[in-house]
Image (cartoon, rainbow, N blue to C red; front, side, top):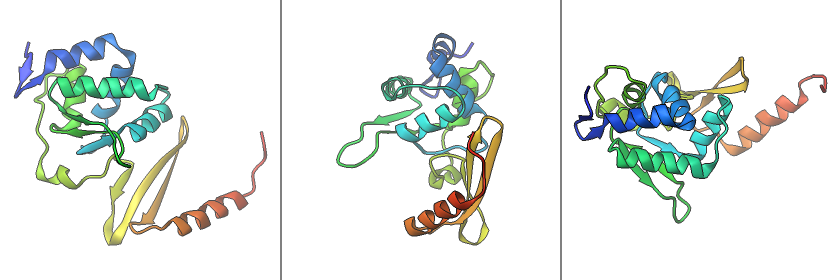
Length: 171
């Protein structure tokens, strides 16, 4: 069994996976992503995991990301002066998730294509200046919107106003 791979503590990742439900849910999520990311904010991660039914506190996520820092998969950065607390990946997050789950994979470094990726794969670059945004409305309902990459807050307000005009029945 490999315990270290290019400085990454594989055994430590597997112990986190096996000992903590939060870590297991996190690793299961990142292992199923379609694309790697170079940075993950604590706030966005809390939202993503919560939308998948894994409720967790901000402090629990900070603890987990600090553990990942110690296991040499990236660097946890405390938010200061208006910056968000975040984790910068030195490795490909998908391979980290798979290795933590016990799969026999090589934990890869980030490649050039990963360097410009957004925080999560809910925003996928499209042709002609659009971004695809996926929103999980319910456990089995996802909504996808293709919006201009320069989508403004006033346009967001207009779109929200439109959604509020749609007919529906209060439950």
